[in-house]
Length: 219
Image (cartoon, rainbow, N blue to C red; front, side):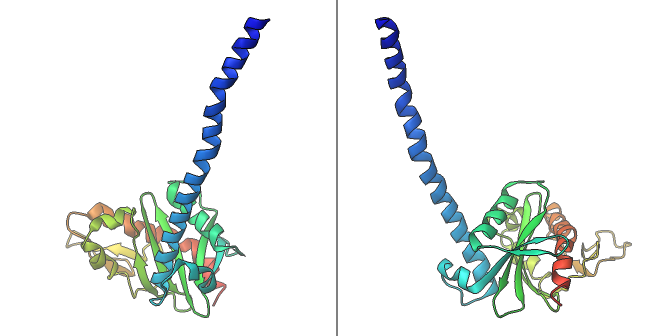
């Protein structure tokens, strides 16, 4: 009937613009944000591993990227895919870790690893041969960055230490004078930020062992 046809046309006109606007506007915004995040991660990792790194565009030529399983198997991937996995891990608290991204600096023994536990995460620059931590950084957004000016004081105690993969590799200085520290690396906590410091120590002890087989295969 004419009345039915008019109602159908009115409904079609009402729905058309809404569907079109969703398809056209949202993907470019999401894509732009993703590109910004990728660039930020490239700069953070690049400058950490090489003081001469100055442009995110250099990343693919300076790093070999892999996804590493706990058994040590590694799969070469494009830097975009490695950073996608990095962002996925950062954004999903508690998600099972089956493969982690690693960033190997070409023509070097240095590799950047990601460790994360709950709201704390860090980049660890490691010498693959000696297993010495050359640097550790807590990116913007990690709860450890909340230590502010004390962040450097905390991280400097970790730099230079060796990864042993033991459950007590890192330990905060016991507050009770009668307790004896049993960790390989004993770290002074920051007054008033014990929970953050403990979370950082737990993060290193719990998640560096994930890379054990990968690192031992490179010796």
